[in-house]
Image (cartoon, rainbow, N blue to C red; front, side):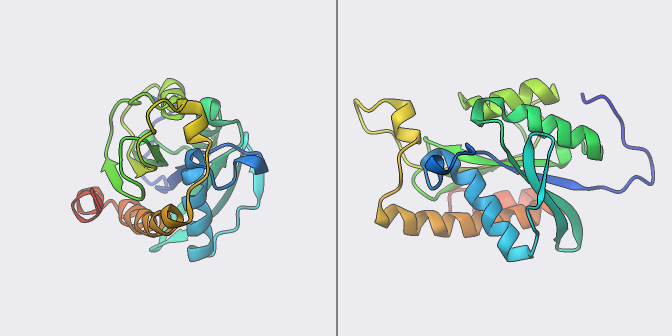
Length: 199
């Protein structure tokens, strides 16, 4: 549990987190798909990522009439939980209102898998968020980046760039992820799972 409880009358704000690494050399890599989804949503919904605070870059705005924060942690992937926990504590956002978007090597390129909670599944960014929020009970959108080729080092693979053909599939995946998150913001998790899992 986090260190606060929502009181009756508190405004419910959603925190949407995209995971990635902050340096320009990581732009467009497989490990940065969370950042790419956040950037797309910022453009789509007119939310400026103009606040640098709490070890992240974020912006506040509206999606489907709901107040949201779009956050890109600037801590590097393995320490993502530091930024997420600080923003969540400052704005009093509970784990169940925190949606995390990140890459998954077990899904085909551009495919989605949405869950309401779950383990880290070997993803170090999620592992760190779980450690800082003290719970696995937060919704997440996993975006497939394709399986690692045999004999290729995992770190090298997740930090590699997409081929031109893969980029098209990923762009479609980012659009679907954005649509799914918009449903989740409106507490339509089940519908998002039914409509977008495996798509």
